[in-house]
Image (cartoon, rainbow, N blue to C red; front, top):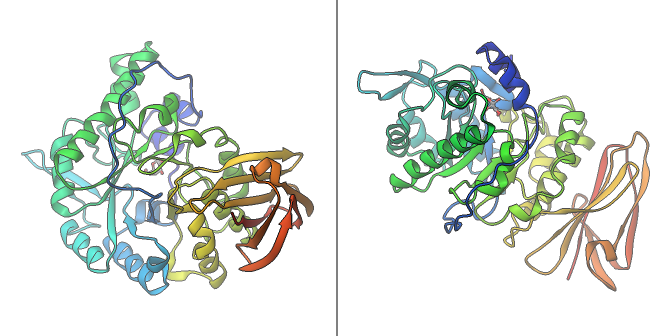
Length: 408
Ligand code: GLA
């Protein structure tokens, strides 16, 4: 059974904390502006696969090897899905020297990393700044440098660092009624791991997972964060996906090469949504320049899901080198239009209908920021629509999308 952040914190006895963890973006605390260091990883949003959304706490070494094999054989690797990320529940106990060992499900992490690398892929891992992870396994508190070195020795390329028990065990214990100090402690925890990773000399993507607290997008880039979760956990259903989307408008100015807003991993192919809804989910994440971490069982992927995950024209929008996150440029009732400027001077535009019946959606060039007549292409259908002047109108199915590219 999948353990949600809420459930796992509750299991750990953090019921009050769990409630806060689901609250998006609480009031931000003032902090010093720092210079953003030049990024060397994640110049485009990281793409890959993560074990949590499908395997959750059951994930094993074999699942990771099988998934790596399938990422290659299905063509996902060629489409750009490079990171194979092990989420929570790989951790064992520390020995008398504080060295963390894997548990029985992962007999040899170095061998696993070598295997994933031998496929031309990269490997990611998961930890928490607290004493325990969200699923109650060993966290990195007090062992940050030691753990970062271990990751580098294993050959790890990506770390998801999840706040979890750091909330009750450090933030609340050390500063019970002092919200500002709690936030400061949280910044320090991420800064510490960021520095520890840098000190290893290995380029490792740092992905912050603290559910969007304290306007994380404002301070994470300065401490070297390459991506930061902007919300609580996504679930494999339409309401969860669309609720997350609704809170992303306005965050566009914080994303760019090396540092990305992360509305959480993809649920495409995990059940709970129709193929039409998965197309919408994928289109939105690409327009948002979000990290694209597939979370399905790739060993058993339907052709329609493969088509959604590997539509190269849609993926190219996410991976566009300009690195500008899309903006919601129009909204009326249950239809909305999102647009993202591209490196070649064109624009990607998503025409969305979240209503219960098909609806006509219009993208006005004036809203997108272009004038006159331009060549338009339908990115899902791979179809040229010819030259279109001033606006494009189309009927969009319920919960569906039409995604176009307006050429320069
Ligand atoms: C939290 C995170 C999830 C996942 C689990 C693992 O809930 O937000 O993405 O990593 O922890 O325990």
